[in-house]
Length: 221
Length: 221
DNA sequence: CCATGGTGTGAACCTGAGTTCAATTCTTCG
DNA sequence: CGAAGAATTGAACTCAGGTTCACACCATGG
Image 1 (cartoon, rainbow over the protein chains, first blue to last red):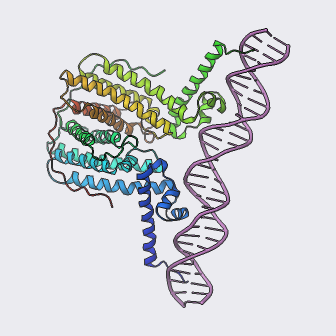
Image 2 (cartoon, each protein chain N blue to C red):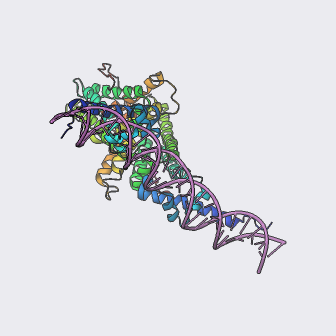
């Protein structure tokens, strides 16, 4: 017996692991999930391709973990804003705005995290974090309902709608095509204001009495 | 000179082309974009693999055209409802409900069309039709603003939000996992009602005066 | 310093699904 | 009917890119 994993080595291992995860972040921010290859990540991390596989079982799991790292942090930030004190409406508005601003700042990376197709494991992880965000909003909405800030409503569905509105309306400004270098341009800022207003009104308005006269809706040929 | 493409042959060609497109529909409804292979489509269309390539240049373009076919039809249906007469709010509610009901009916297929990652060409086409739907909503909202049914607002952003809310809130019920055979279950119906209410309130409520006290929002490590 | 075993390397390997194409079958019309 | 030219076929080919692995290098502790 003449070898035992020393603490220093252990740290170097962790370090390398983190370097690889950060490299994924960098590569994805550059070329998106579509163009991100394991070889590129290895190069960015200053490591050989094989080394990547000493730390992660597959490309899918590596990328999924990288997404989890980022998304997890974002959830924390948004949850912190949502969980601060103050009126529910203001907290919701702030949470939405923080999410949107940070996404716009992150640009390509945010687009990838939010919407770009990728390995199944990544897509699955995305769903998890999407739900995590929705849960934050749901809790906030329920909170608001309890103390009368918002009218009674289906908080779960409303949270999903908020999440969807946010993502969809942001994809335009974030899309990899047609965004030269406008991180924070007036257009974007106006869009964010519109999104926040939209969601706030949806959640805080008195229930809308729905009309009931549907028309034709036959199936496609 | 002893051959000329006769009209009958021409029709058979068209027929085969359509059969292939329909086969894509069927296969995607069954296994989604992820699992859909050209060989499967060929089998479903009762054609050899090679024949597919006599009608379409590549898998991506074939699938994109299939999506365009479906999505185009859906846009027409929704646009028809949106463009009928009656108060703007009622038309918007109806358009949303028709979209949602038809999606729920279509199940797996709708999920694929709305959200499932696929070839770049397909994803691109999806964006086109997503925008087409958004345009329908945008026109409707602008219309409502003009004749006072809705308050002044950023119609473009609102339309994107509506589209996003609709899609996101529907993905839950439509997701391929955890949906045994509940096409139209009470939960789904309640969700649809909630979505419609959400969007209607968002668009028709008086503008929400936004608060302005943002907190910390540092970047990830 | 050397025996033991872990870690790093990167070129070679493998895979599966899209695509091709030579051979076959079918259509047309003199 | 038969020659010319299309359409069809499906087995074989291709190839990008993830994954592996034999070898080299380094760390440990007696």
